[in-house]
Amino acid sequence: MAKGITTRAEDYSQWYIDLVLKSEMADYSPVKGCMVIRPTGYGIWERIQQNLDRMFKETGHVNAYFPMFIPESFLKKEAEHVEGFAPECAVVTMGGGKKLEEPLVIRPTSETIIWSTYKNWISSYRDLPLLINQWANVCRWEMRTRLFLRTTEFLWQEGHTAHASFEDAEEETQKMIRVYQRFAEEFLAMPVLVGRKTESEKFAGANYTLCIEAMMQDGKALQAGTSHHLGQNFAKAFDVKFQDKDKELKYVYATSWGVSTRLIGALVMTHSDDKGLVIPPRLAPLPVVIVPIYRSDEERDLVLGKAREMTRGWDPLFFKIDDRDQYKPGYKFNEWELKGIPIRIELGPRDVQQNAVVAARRDTGEKVTLPMEGLREKLDEMLVAIQQNLFDTAKKRMDENTFSVDSYDEYKARVEGGGFYRVFLDHTNREVEEKLKDDTKSTIRCIPFDAPEEEGPCMITGKPCTSRVIAAQAY
RNA sequence: CGGGGUGUAGCGCAGUCCGGUUUAGCGCGCUUGGUUCGGGACCAAGAGGUCGGAGGUUCAAAUCCUCUCACCCCGACCA
Image 1 (cartoon, rainbow, N blue to C red):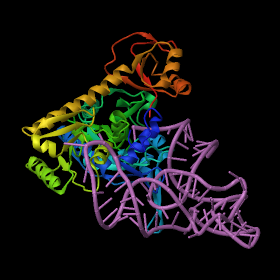
Image 2 (image 1 turned 180 degrees about the vertical axis):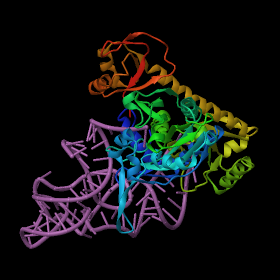
Image 3 (image 1 turned 120 degrees about the horizontal axis):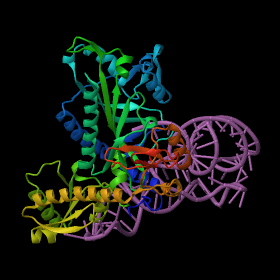
């Protein structure tokens, strides 16, 4: 166990807080509910951005930037939307020392300002689809905050697209939730459940919301990304029409989709352990750290010389030689483990003698001796193996903690202990969801896409259902 | 907004009940010098404090009283 970190067994949420602070991913800020993202955390966010951004562009999207301030009246134009967001908005009433004519809302999401702009950009079917993404900060005045998982201000990306038909928008909504799934699984090494949100859990202003849900180590669910089919709701609110091939004037169809810095919290709660952070290699800003071991100045020169020689030609962003003289190797081992670096290389006089290095895996702790010959390739193989192992471990945990339950009493007794529950619930009935929440603090996380057809009675009302939904306690 | 907790050196804390031998300490970290170095080294010498803020009681306040501010944790809302 690392110094100063509560173990997971002792107190899971305290472990999370200790880990985030001690690994220097983030710090509390002078403003309640806000956080400072430190280089260790921001580096992960940059890797998330780089990889997702590429995936967005490969699927035809381009980036733009819309302002943070939104006229208050804009937010009020879509009834369901304003109802959902008004209570959590920060509002600017003063500017330049004077009271503003109209208060400005700090964006909680950008649908309104974007659609007021799209109105000017769209007039013909030839302008569609319009596929734009933005990387931005948003602000939601939450009552209870948690580092990365829920902060007052957070960073995210929001895609906002416009389409000529309901079906085109539907295809986009689907496509993007699959992009998120692929990103979560291939980069975060985090298996997810893909499905649709219930009416009461969907985005305020959407026709429907698709989501990816992940399972944290304590068995709780975490919504990791959403993709919304907005129908013509915003087009109607902001009067965005286009002339179609058939000469008819029609409202456009919209989607929006986003993931946030919450993914960093998800990453922590999926892979990290009592020693500290564990970063999947594909997202690691620094995959390899080299710790030289020496006694005398002569050994220092020998070992550091060898380290430099052996890394000649390597991408400088791939590795770092920790040549700090004021710390002993053991201290460095612990520090780099705390910071989650996937592979640590130990290089001492013995290794130089044998023309080899010792490589330690962060995920398993396993140490192996690798010959200098072909080292770079071996490291790549090891990184791939780590990435795969992290995914497999998380997948296994999710599978082993997903249960089919048919009796409400059994569900009530078990759900507190974590896990996903495949259950029959009438998800079209709001009262069912409310009772579920009141009784068990759990919610329907999603109606999964891949649920086999299965018949059974709703655990609460007895009404026949044709498939199971996933219910769980969530963050 | 309810319930709980904490504010004393950069970090973690003791001291507060019962005011005065306290010149406000301890551990970590930091600085300097030396010895160390294959899993969180050791010795020595240093630097660092408006005791969260305001007011009050008193000969005397980190300590007692009143007010206040901030943050954290747990609940009700949410990516």
